[in-house]
Image (tube, rainbow, N blue to C red; front, side, top):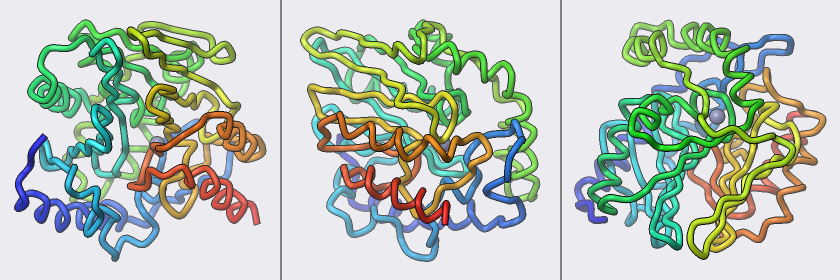
Length: 309
Ligand SMILES: [Zn+2]
């Protein structure tokens, strides 16, 4: 992957701005108290608490691996064949691609929209050539599966839990309603319009949450594991033992704060995070935020403890 120096500079300047802009709206309550079936990460939850400082990308050695696909879609190849994708729409959310032993690709979660997912796969085709792709959704929120319709159109199998499919069906429209409220300001019109028509399409290959899932790709496996209710009732994590990479999704907090807890189980969340210590990790990918170090487990526990005080 090669992106010009100029692009890096543009990114470093653009990304913090986009983040600050997205989080400037303070109208809604980022942590609705309870009962609401509307359940995604609010703008605050999806962005660093201090938006005035540049994100970790600027001045970070990782900036060398940063590549911009479109105005709001970025990829970072953090090690050979391990790519973190960030879509800011307008809240920055991560997904992950890992190249497996048999040269196929595993995509964990999707960008927010089918359009951005198409843009990502077009980039993937240039970066890798023609490859078999398998997708996994880590939960029913649209920052996990908003791109499913495009994946399915392309014949890509999408794995997810039965509970994810059920919650999407039961709570999807309430989630849409809450989101449209967050995006009422005229400057968010483009995002609002996308969310009005965003297709909520469940995964196609369903598994039981409690049983989890193990998929084999040549000499490498992928483990999908449910550590208990956390950020949402259905948040699973995806572990790549051959790479020591864990995609924690939204239950792992990559910024300072816990965000929207309307869908969370605050009693079981800390234990669920502790349970992830079972995985030997060099890299942990949170649902939101730039940090990728294994210290994110302790950081998440700390953030949850502060929130409970
Ligand atoms: Zn999220």
